[in-house]
Amino acid sequence: MIICDTSFMAKLYVPERESVAVRRLLEAEDEVYVSELARLELMGVFHRRLRERKWTRSDFLAAVRQFSNDDISGFWTWLSIDSRIIEAAAKTYATLPDTVFLRSSDCLHLVTALHHNFTEIFTYDTHQSIAASVLGLKATNCEIA
Image 1: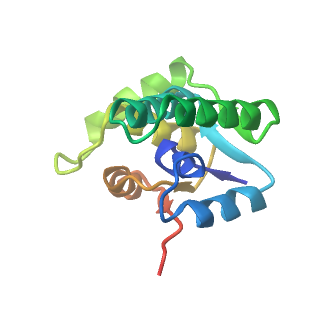
Image 2 (image 1 turned 90 degrees about the vertical axis):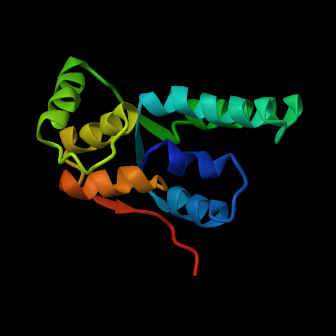
């Protein structure tokens, strides 16, 4: 049972050097938790690849279909973002050191993980990894040697 953010889950659909290791890890897990925010962010990742001409329309639609099939089959376990999580995320900035760069969407991923008692989050986002450690979460990825 793990939780990951969009930067991690995207590697399942966007071919990158870490994709094979990410697939192996995710498919070996009983449950893979993600914030509902990741659903929107992942579509943004797909559309960006289309917009930047890294994917054809066919590639884009194939990724959307694969994600939809994975979702329908229960591969992802979605964690709601409710008002308690939004409030906790907003309050996070009151105590966050001024040297830590944390985007609001990344803050939602981290606070969602904390709210659901995870101690570790899988991410490839450098800024989020730094902020995770400040908030008491271990940030992990599938490093390639």
